[in-house]
Image (cartoon, rainbow, N blue to C red; front, side, top):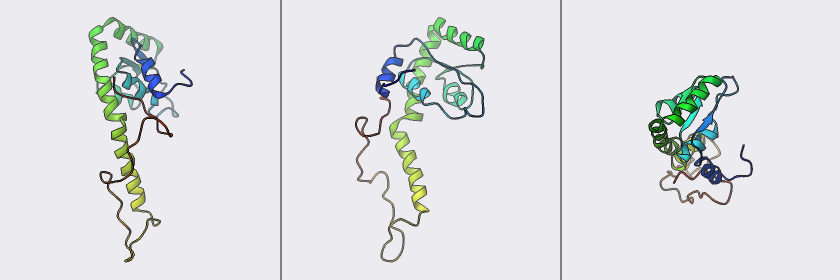
Length: 163
């Protein structure tokens, strides 16, 4: 556990690892994607994780991770497989950063959030109305005058995916 670290510091620390490991237990409370996976992918290092939930898609189908059964022996075999197979480690590493950008990158997620806000606001009666009584159109994300998010200051903090 790394406490008191910024996302950029955590990514920098994970980049030092030979292999990053994320075991997940199959239980009802454990179906969300862990933020740790976004940080691991951003590090560009090989990942070994248990084959569970969304990890099948995020890590397995993309080639960004070596998935194992949810058992200590299987996890150990996966770790040793990556450590003893430089070609596998290189392939996993090369796949990680593009997957991080595609699934967790700020640019992609800003558009997703704006789409959700647009859907919510389009059904809201609290939007301002024109003199004719029609709801005022929402600005499109591409023409919105709001400033671009920054990676420092305020509450916005995301891993820096650049190497």
